[in-house]
Length: 162
Ligand SMILES: Cc1cc2nc3c(=O)[nH]c(=O)nc-3n(C[C@H](O)[C@H](O)[C@H](O)COP(=O)(O)O)c2cc1C
Image (cartoon, rainbow, N blue to C red):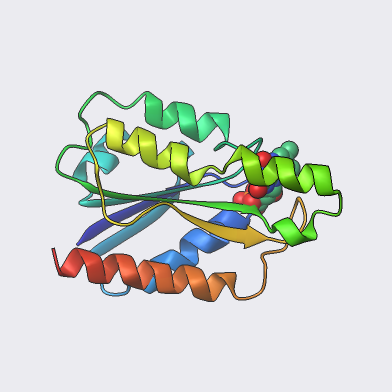
């Protein structure tokens, strides 16, 4: 399996989750993990499995990674497997009830990422996945690195049994 993990990260937590997912993938023939800013179309085209992650900011992925994906040519992910993840605030760490309800209702980055990857021709390997941070800027919630590693292993297992 040739896997490519692309991420955006403001405070570093999405990057740490991406690295844990990479550890979970285990015996990929090749695994590259890079910020989307270093990604070229060639790199993306040569991957069999493309995993994309972003922090949730204002209920959405960062505008930069979202736009980057939207700019990929039509059908450029045809024949590739994709998976999307985000980091998001743990609701119980939001003190204000109205804000908590708004964040819960507003949605998270992984779904729109997933949607654009599918629109470009990708085939979903797993459903979009969220990982939690405590408060607005983190740290990561307890156990999330382990959860990310498990999710990576699940992706690898799914890929093997296709
Ligand atoms: C300006 C701003 C907006 C945010 N908006 C949301 C949001 O809408 N929903 C959410 O769950 N978390 C939100 N968060 C929390 C971020 O998701 C959190 O900072 C991020 O997961 C950390 O990842 P990073 O270290 O990779 O940047 C926001 C944080 C900031 C600073």
